[in-house]
Image 1 (cartoon, helix red, strand yellow):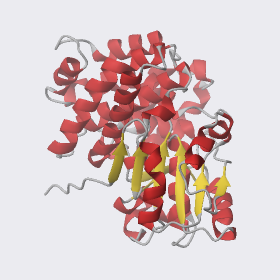
Image 2: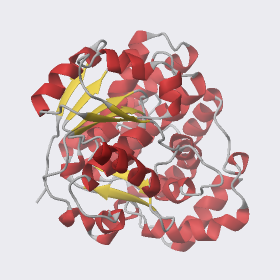
Image 3: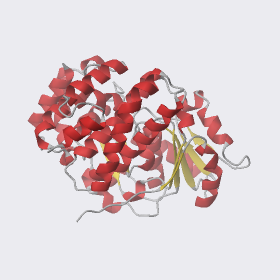
Image 4: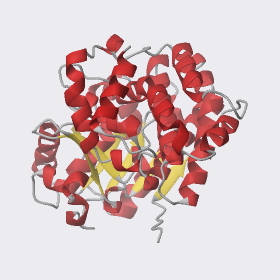
Length: 377
């Protein structure tokens, strides 16, 4: 039997951030904690969000979100939440800020530590409906975490895990493409490839969920048609709108689960000394994974090729590698600082990742080691 749930309240369009005050009132949030990062503050985006909030509202701001959210950062933000007597969370930023905010809303009402709520520890059953209310305001077009049912957080023990539950989906998502117009080309490319990876992996997941599959393939069509336009001209409003929509659609399809691309990128993202960008990792390892899965997805590669504007028999791994090159992304993991001696442990962790079971082709530790070695060359 398929379990299909869609999803949360979403405001989507240019200027949508102006609805923030209305949604805070509707959720009864009187003293919000804003979770963001220093880059968002420096870019002036936090000021734009604050302008959309009631002028007399008491607001606490945590801007210490790291590139890959961590359990210590969740504790720090939670301490501010409690100190300021907050009663709700507003996440402003990319996936890191949104995922960190999810950790805060969970521990605002649930006992620590976070590890007990990890999906791979059977934690979904421990997450109850009484999480703190949360509004997500994405400023990138890639992660889709504003409508995602989980947060990806590096635990104290070094594992990068998914904390997944329908109760983790933000109460409201405010998707305003205006907030992405100043995103630099490199970050536009990396986050855009993250969205594309979500659409591809959810589409080819063997889990039966036709509505999610339809959303994923349409998201892939939009991302493929607009990512290079958005990178070339950040002020292309139509491209920005479509990239934010593709990002959201990729995450709407998370109901089907992801696969080996994310099972590989999650442990790599836990390497604190490298601080690797998640979307860039997805882009770099995707060609190898597409080759690995090619004979285990029925006609889905042909359907994806058509959605991407290619010939039905196009070589998708070659196409993605060429797209990465045109976007200025790294050609391999070595260019990102990954060394050969790191790979055995990365392969071991990939088999334990919560995305591994929904890859269309079962992958062993030996398989992952071969994939990592292909992606490092």
